[in-house]
Length: 416
Image 1: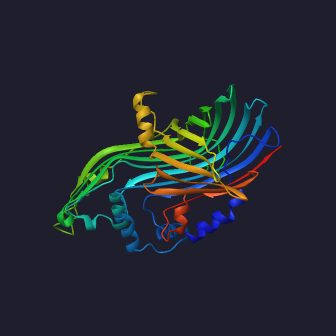
Image 2: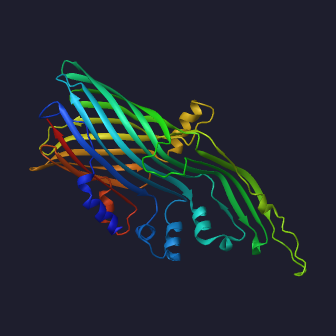
Image 3: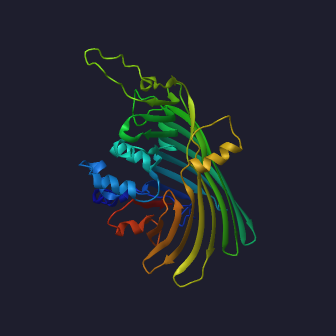
């Protein structure tokens, strides 16, 4: 984990997090942006370092992961790089373009799957290991976004409406869903009962070029905010969209159960023909196009400007994500409902305040919810002109010996 922290700190000049703001020096605004985040419920530092840099994973490390936290384990990693341009008119309307290269991994699995993976089934005779509702999902794509924002003044108050359309070029998608999965091992291991329902989707793996175009799609944004008497209310919906992957993609599924009772041998000179149901495990595979969704972000917020010596404002944000596994029967209420659940993200709450110090501006706050159950502390520091901003969404993790999450960003911008 020390190497990861060092990598992030050394890479800070490459990581930027773009924010909307009114240009001070002219109508043109340029930024280069990146965002990196690794979040896990229970994956500890020693285990992660061993997987990344090599080494021996001890039984103690395995047991610590299995025995810590909830029965369901979640791991989410994101890396986004890009740049943007915005032009603001004299009436504070704006036109903007943004390019992003997006990499995401999202997974959720039970402790029973870890037990089976780490220790096999020998130690669980007489028990049923349940690894249902397991999902592993990985995406890489490029996003070209063009948008427009309109500002309507109502005396001293104003209304802002903005919308954007994105063109998506999909590179690769891999997804594994174990909708139903359980393994029962009898006492003394005399027989096994296995039930499973597994679906998998993957784009063409013959060429793993990082910028290969295996699919195309689109996404839309919509935002509405109203400011009155230094109070701002806003709803923002970003990246509701999908990618259609080409016909060379692979779709596989299997749904069955079997009972394995072994082979009884009475005479080693005349071995019986092996024909047990374990050989009946099969799956259907075909090449076909399919559709996957990118994570949509829905934010409700309230902020108030304060006339305080140090505290400039206070803000409250509610964040949700929507990303269903796949389309079943078209767009309907079931798809809408599933999208929130299958995103793996629980609605989070942010509370933060902007603080004006002598030489720098800062934002400090806390977050509850998201991909983990922990309360997280966020901190940003910026110069008075807003040219450079650095920060993290997991400040509290920097002081923990055994870290489960990390994030860092820096903002570099120019206005002319």
